[in-house]
Each structure stands twice: as C-alpha cells, then as structure tokens.
Picture 1 (cartoon, rainbow, N blue to C red):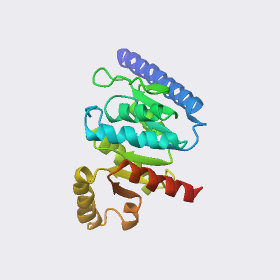
Picture 2: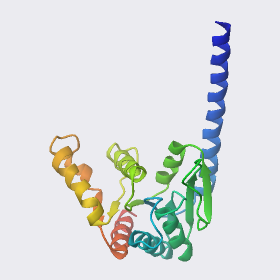
Picture 3: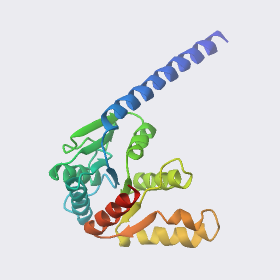
Picture 4: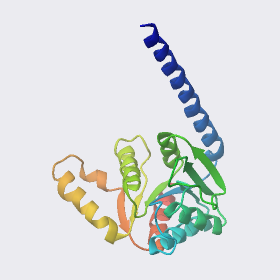
Amino acid sequence: MEEGRIEDFKLMIKDAWRLQTFLAESVTAINKMHDLGPAVTIFGSARTNPRSQDYKNARKIAGLFARNNYAVISGGGGGIMEAANRGAAEGGGKSVGLNIILPHEQMPNQYANIRLDFKYFFIRKVFLVRYSDAFIIMPGGFGTLDEFFEVVTLIQTRRSKSCPVVLVGAKFWKGLVEWIRAVMLEHKTISAEDMEHIQILDSPEEVFEFIDCLCKQRN
C-alpha cells in the first residue's frame, strides 16, 4: 500500500511538471506571435521533395503572401513546411516555424525567422491556428489530414473564427472532398454549411487572390 502511494505521488509530481511545460510553451508562443498581423498557416507533408511541384507551389504561395504583408506560419520542419518558410523569408516577410521536437524525422528548417520549439503536439496545434486568418492545405499524410480536420472542426463548432480553408491540388484532394459530400453529407453527420469554408484550388495565384479577397472583405 505504501509503495502504491509513493508511485501515485511520483505521478502527481510528473503531471505537475507537465503542466508547467504546457504553460511555459504557451507563454513563449504568445509573446512571439501576438503581434504578427494578418497571417496564413500552410500545412503539408514533411516528406515532400524540394524538386517536386508541390514544394515549388508552397514556396510560391508563401512568397505571394509575404510580399503582401501577411505573416506565414508553418510547422517549422522540412518538406512543405520548409517551402512555406523559405518562400516567406524570400518574400521579406515574417516566416514563422512552429517546430515539434521529435526523436526522429523532423528537424527545424533554416528559413523561419520566428522560430518556436514545442514538446507537445496539442500546444503546437493551438498556435498553428490561433493567429491565422486562413489555412492552406498542401498534399500530405496523416499529420496533414489531422490538421485539416482539426481546423474544419474548430470552425464548425465555432471554437475558431470563420476562415477560408484552401486545399491545394485538385488531383490530390478531389476524391476526399467528393467522399465527404457523398457519404458524410448524405448520412447527415455534417451539414451543407460545413463545406462552405472549403475550397479546392490549383495555382498559387488563385490561392492568394481567393484568400486575400475574403480577408479584405472581412476587414
């Protein structure tokens, strides 16, 4: 019994330290990000090759926004995240990289001029969303799908402000959106208005013009 109480106490201390880390990561992020101004978040695969068209598109999209006084936020790693930070830095804008500390796969890219490191995914996700006026979803894997559905869920439940959500690349995303409409909408697990925020576009110029127009109308 005594041994069990000692283990419970150790667990309580460990949880208390976790809470301190949650708070410290949040305070640091607020201090660095609260005055970004207009901002967009670009999600996408960490595995995207720099020679690929997806990388080039993300880099160009980020550059367009940066040159028009938007901060660009990414997950801070490689692939699409690197392309986003690279394009923003080349465009002379605020290039925000919110890196997650992992034992493998992700290393911070060199192009973020505002960099934050997070131990916990859920704290990082808060700040990938909190200061953004629009979300750009490039082709990606499970992590990108998680971020996409997180964003649309927050908008659907009004835990986040209504924002444009752009899926870049019809060939990649069309099947998923058609399935959502044919199955989820048909089964009434979502409503038609939940789809109003989602737009599929292909070219960097279309992405910028669509989001910029909506942001200006809102302001």
